[in-house]
Length: 352
Image (cartoon, rainbow, N blue to C red):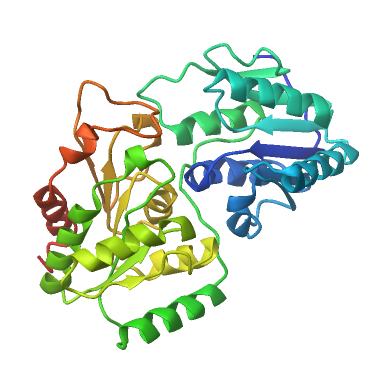
């Protein structure tokens, strides 16, 4: 790995064009960067869907965003963002994400060419990062977690990298909005609250909705709990399907909470049950009792914090994989309702 000289007042651009969970897993690296360079100007380039949280990060001075869904309007906004970044004349541009595909590698190479930072740093995933000035070894061993792989970039930037505590960021005023919503919908104050995240960007990582409904009914009765279904606007139908399958009456917050409001909601949960997704990592960072239902996902991106967390994963011949859709869902269907209920009892023994 080539040496990299950084001055305390340099301008840095940290790039992570990835999802919510990836941002959570990058939080120790952002903290390490600010600790090492308290006077540096540190900017962050993210996808628009994570902006609501990263803009509250105390380690970042400025946020740039890219849109994912391309149209004439979003392409124009992305070009404007590139021009703004280029005008900043960054001393260092560091990409935190791995280079897992050839198309993603080509896009990152082109982006860094357009940005024109003086030096570039990134993870040399399986020798794909030849275009970086400073290449961080990233052979993607299954035993090394993504949190630690991202922190290797901080090491390349001469940071002390020994604190892996995860963080999420949301202003306290979001708590008031969430409390008001839950109390209005439930008609009760201070009720035991269980959050269920039944969605996820990849359908291949979604446990069957009918299983979530069965689990929720048992827990609603056992703990006299209020069940709250979380998710995005695109997942409202999933939530409504689950609601129709239940005897109890859950609250649907899908499409209601912003990202920081979701953080505030999970902060008040007594238990969170989730598919492999961004909200899973938020709950893990908040050290909430968490049952994580993992289908085909790779070990590197499972919940990093083992405290108050039980990961349910069944090994099958075709797993792990990056499939977007899957007809069989063997890895997820192998996880039974009783597996989740037993995990909850282990996490909440005093109430079991």
